[in-house]
Length: 160
Image (cartoon, rainbow, N blue to C red; front, top):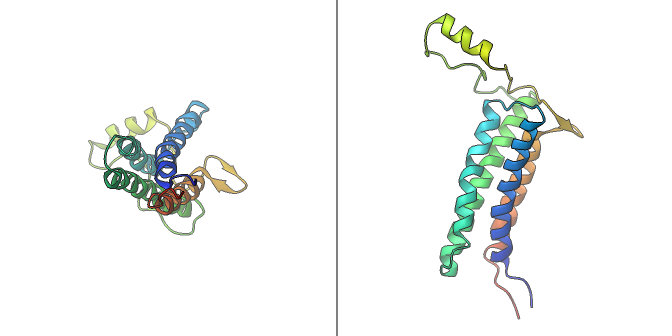
């Protein structure tokens, strides 16, 4: 008997974003400070985890598949943001944010005080790389690869 693809897809949809978030938080414990675009990549993962949990609920198979596919879409969104962020880091294209304090939050002295109270983290400079791949690049690879696996596995039924 072959394994049911939906079961494997549900596990990927739950464990992949949870592991990537744990890695992101762990990197912060080790001293890395996330930039604005790093946070953008986390939001779809935050949403994917509870959606993936719902795919384990005792529902009809089509409902479980709907939840797991939605989690896959959220994971793919994070991967797409990761591609954009990695491109900004590698200077393939310009970013859409200056990764600085928001404009219009007060007078110039307020902005200066806010900037002095927190670390300046640029979105276009990777804080860490392995084999030339930044954390944004790893998120892109793992998230998009995981999303493809979810989309490929979810519709497969166990064969006898």
